[in-house]
Image (tube, rainbow, N blue to C red; front, side):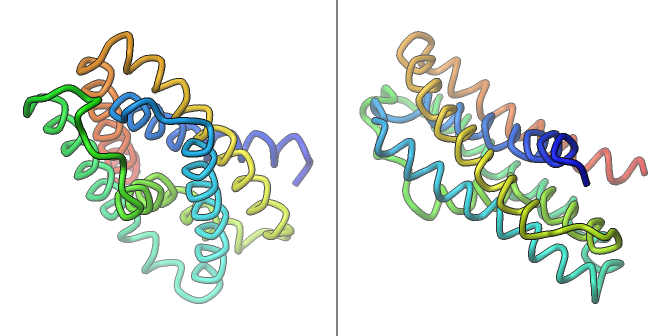
Length: 185
């Protein structure tokens, strides 16, 4: 793969993490740069690991992973997105809520990285340097998700529940899109 194609792949794998981070940033009490970077590192590490897992699985079990990856992504993203919408409308301002837990961050990161695992499966059949590709995806995702948290902070202050609701709906829609794309073939 050329550097340009690796860059395009890294950006495309990072967009869903950006959307998730944007929604989460809108729902949190004024997240700072440190929190945004910490969240970005979690998203980036998971997004870098999943194509490696996919690549390894692709070498051994490609038909099994491809059969369920879309359902896993839909379930995780749908659950996190639905919870965000519920959280936005259950009462109380976003500033009154607890910060995003480590577990919720990891689950969201896993949900947004399932597609990277599927890409890793497909890369198993090409002659590529999977470590370079995984590192590019991880670094890009870290940058995108950290930026998303901070941008969500601004949107959260400006638009409150609407931004959090839209972020949750975007996560659910992203999971549904992954599901539909896989089911439609």
